Image 1 (cartoon, rainbow, N blue to C red):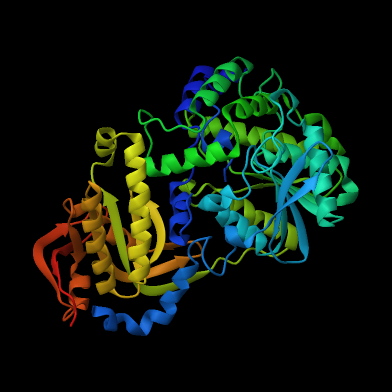
Image 2: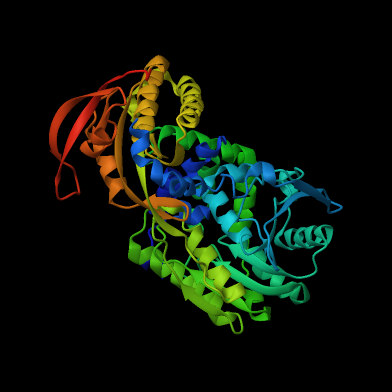
Length: 530
């Protein structure tokens, strides 16, 4: 029956190819706060299967850009959250408490985590900040993972023991009742806790949870049993490593940082043992015993690598519908992330907030005039292969450090990364150009080249992101630049008159995806202002 949905062999191969892949769009934002780094369900994140004066009047509005990253001032950052330890009798469990509001929430661990390391992963930091905006969040690392005590591989905590650890953490915090949240793999533990401790559970939220991870004749919405062993072998082999042979839209630097985070969370042996345990877990029998208000969230559009949209939609919907049908009074909500590259956890938070508070999340939106800088490393794959992984990683770390330093000196704000480059905003085009030229020279000194594009236009601030046609124009301007070249739009050139910046006319270009031609100029000289 299951074979009509998915080919087991494809599941294993696809799982190996993108085991650690996550949102490039959010994961890169840590750099803007000077950090070094949700998790998201591994089954979904991968697979089971000068001119400054010209824009001065807009400076106050542009300051709002400083909130674009979850690590920035005004939002919770890693250094703001203290890590505590609760003694379970079988070992210490690390936990954190953050956020403000009248609702207390227990966020059950999503598979394998590292409390402090996850604040350096923007996809996680972004949704944690959003959770903390309307309530107090309590989260912890399971024993054997992250910052909690290590345990022997044959003594990793069972689902029941992990539930007891959660209870002990709540006791240590001094909280009697919580809304229990289980996003993706955390949903198994959340369901167990709510069913066992209804007196301590005010509500339950499960999102894209696999109530059973292996298929049966009457439950086809999971991985076939014969695919589990090969999957575990592949997962163990790939854990914490970077494989240049694997095709991905993510840059080598992003892969290396994600691999580093994996190594923080657990060893390959722990990963294999805990994943095997998850495959053996079946929470279906306890679902009818859940007697608290329950929200089941499903995003059927979240890709599972190796499957067609019809296949993974069928799997997601089957899992969610089963949970909603078997939990008394459960409410099923179907949602979809605006961008799959975002990791999708934001859509879970929006539905969670509305369910728990009765009020929808109000998304910040504003429009400001700002200058956008896009950069990209030229021939990064070939350069990395020539230098070797270790040397390339060291150079990228130094490049990132110098980028942040240069950005700070020019009063820029890092928004994002795309591929092997950065996206930053400035309140003046001259500063953006000076920053870009410095970055070009910095890269040369490190042994590789970058290209850069600059454009000024009206941008829409969308909570954690910046959008609008100006963003697309800036990206396309960069794509037209030659190695070690800073290319700007005609708008930018006109705004920096008298700034000491010199240009060569590169003519008119029809930029990809845009309906009009843009005159572009290459920066040839940036003179010091006397």
